[in-house]
Picture (tube, rainbow, N blue to C red):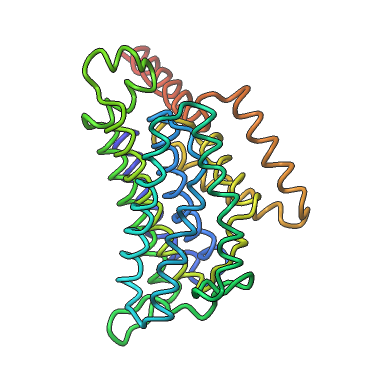
Length: 320
């Protein structure tokens, strides 16, 4: 993405609380955009760049949420340490998922990781004795604090923005590093990449771990911002919504998933009056994105940018 556009975007996001300081609904929605934008971008790294069809990302997110919530509620641990513990647990689970999936290909990886997603709500519901809260989940989770200062909406906004930008920066650096080149080469031509010495197992395990840790950090922040978590976080509508973010924003395009997160979340909020028909709309978005928007919103924005540059150059030439 153009550096000027990036700086302007960061500046706009930084001053939005000054504009909407009296509108807690918009502030809350923007924080959710940061959280799910980070999760979708991490998922896009593993699906869009490494071409590993993992469907366990929301389960990993839930693992981080429950880890942080359980140790802060039951052990009195600081929420900051809870976020780190959640990220560590998510990374460990990501590696444990990645190990058996290394021997699987394509649809079989999708089925194996989807099995985790489908099994996890039952484990949480039946794990009341272990501190999961059962079907009701956990509430009263402590908020983030620095000394005697408790994070409010403004503090959570800027902390969420910081995490969001940090996750995008980390993903951008990974994509443009030798690791990223290895992911892309395995995606575009696996046999050719292997012939050049790219170790498929090593790099796929790395991408599972990195994606899981980023998702875990976002999960830890989410649970201390919302201050409640339940097995409902693994419902189909949220799962579909994050997939729609990736596809609508641009699969395998940076920062398409982040842009898609903002678009889908605000669209989802606008569709609340239609109730369950939101899932129908999300399904239509996924199908249309796959059929007619292969590059997603980021592709459309890039095309518009190229057209504007061509027009500007034409006007400059005529003026001369």
